[in-house]
Length: 220
Image (cartoon, rainbow, N blue to C red; front, side, top):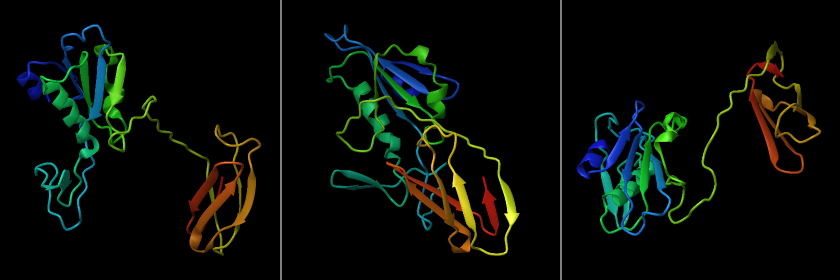
């Protein structure tokens, strides 16, 4: 991407996390419009069929073109999110597409937790609008604030040995932001072989809890 920016005489920024920002001035007549940010991520999910010999660190993808569609040969294609990278690069390299000032943002490590986006220095951007090109269907736009969060939940747990694989379990949902009020309490038996499935409906939606306790009884 950096070499692409150099080749096309475009301003670029590459931070210490390897995120890349490429800026392109507005075309004549569009200079007064707010700058637009085009955003996608560089990384992909590396998966292959069991019998496919492929080293993602060294080997290029083997592509198949069927009609207007591009497929990878027994590996993931990387369209998530290579499509955003390709679309942004196409506009950046174009000479016949009218546009306001553009800032193309290419982040790293999206698949492992939005790492690049979280490390990006937003002060390097001037855009007032952002188009995230990482959706599900071509031709569909979602208007919202893109983002995500992770929650690490640690519960105090105690284990007690049991002689039977069928015991009674009492589950109470308490002090949980999204739980209904009052929180429901249920008593159900453990399904055999140590797997517990708990389901209850309180208005809407369906809450499903699952525990696999093997030979122990789990109490929360």
